[in-house]
Image (cartoon, rainbow, N blue to C red; front, side, top):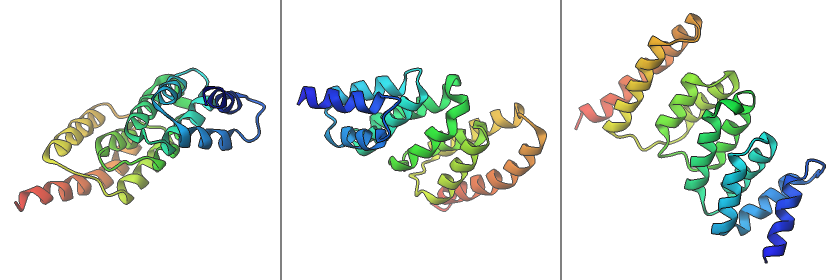
Length: 175
């Protein structure tokens, strides 16, 4: 089995391999603890294409939560800024229900593609919201308001975030 997994890993990481996705998917389906660790290492590595494939494998694996942690780390890593959108796109294959704050941060601070995808997730995913989630979101929102990248985006994001925050707060004010 070890030899089989190494072959899958080699094929997935081979830049000339035209079926790299196929091998990533296969790896995700057979991933054990050791494979998970190797995949997470690849997600954190310097080759964004291999990191993306490893992210895909993790999204299929039984290590969804730990895989998502690694992919979110990659999204916020400055070295992946140019490819951030690809990583944000792959997280749709993970369970995001507990990750409202992370998705909100991507929406606020991500590049255009990342922010657009994150907004779609915020609108479509059914999140588990708690008063603590709201406090964290407010903290990031205040940070964003005091450190905007450009004034134009502040107006747009205000029109989207303020009603969202109000709606979330109302969930708990009725209790």
